[in-house]
Length: 201
Ligand SMILES: [Zn+2]
Image (cartoon, rainbow, N blue to C red; front, top):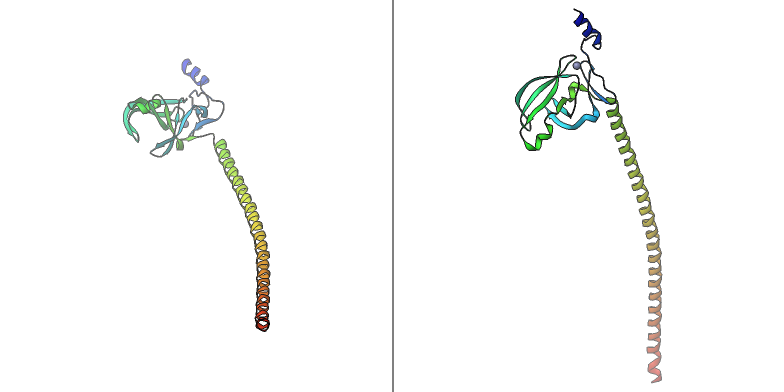
């Protein structure tokens, strides 16, 4: 009797289960908000589970392990144990107990928490995404500005070239008419010579 009283006093909250608390960006049980892991213990976010994404953690707390069993996962056969939240009992992922493949050895002793079973440091995630979005938008508008400026310069050059071409054309036509003039004068000279010459000979 006195023993169970002691345990109740030591336990956290109404669940009667003593939960550890974490400081910093944390992952919590979606069901009951129990602290499960720190984001600094995320090894990889690129795992695929049956129900979607899973994160690989090097360390988790407030969990209990189920029985070890062989399971065929996407990348091979592993000995795994289900991982449950000790506060609410929901299965939130699994632990890689034994890994056969040499290339996957790094997973051994680590935990997968399924993304849809946990609450991440969501504020930070969405902040990052928003920042990324703003960054891309700013970059895009800078590129557009640059293109517009460049297009204006190209247009200016084209306009200048056009003006120059027009001047050149009018000069050519001036010269052409001058040549015509000279040619007809020459013709006149010749015919005058021809007309005069026989008389002198
Ligand atoms: Zn829970």
